[in-house]
Image: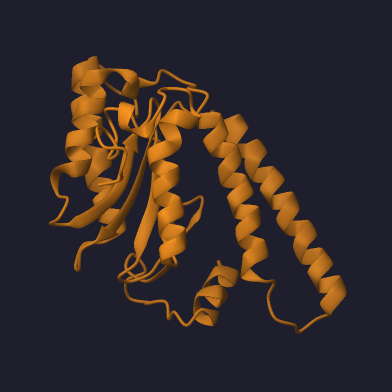
Length: 236
């Protein structure tokens, strides 16, 4: 957490101590979440059974080993009192971790409730409902067991509250359709990443709209109904 705060400051971003949900670093028990006022974000949230705990712990342990080795090598090469490792190297370790999680999700593990059209439709409706009011959606996709989005929260609307609204509403409605009680629908922890520039923004949008093709669900992005690319092959 201290390293992430340092990296924010080194990028010229001052974490807001009074409200880290808008600008700064906060955690919900597992991952640190970095927020920047006025930023665009890439987000992922997944079904509760889409990633078994033992698989997640394995990936997290591998990431931890890479980080430990990296810092040890850096300290040995530079000695005490030097600057923190380069942001690019840390981000590559994080990207590799996320790639492993994404590859596992794309295998379609778990019940994949979002494969059912009526469930995918209600999640689509919820994600798009406040587009242009509480946030602006640049790209989004509903996969069988997870959801991706690229969005820009409107002023006075935090990303955390937007995600909470999506997840709480769709969980209630989906469990009614499925006649489920007493079982979580979504995984508690979501992944979010603030987008630093236009090039990264374009890459994130391409990744989101191409995810169904990469997972073997359709031939082109425009063929997947539950996506911003449906019908014209372009993010909304």
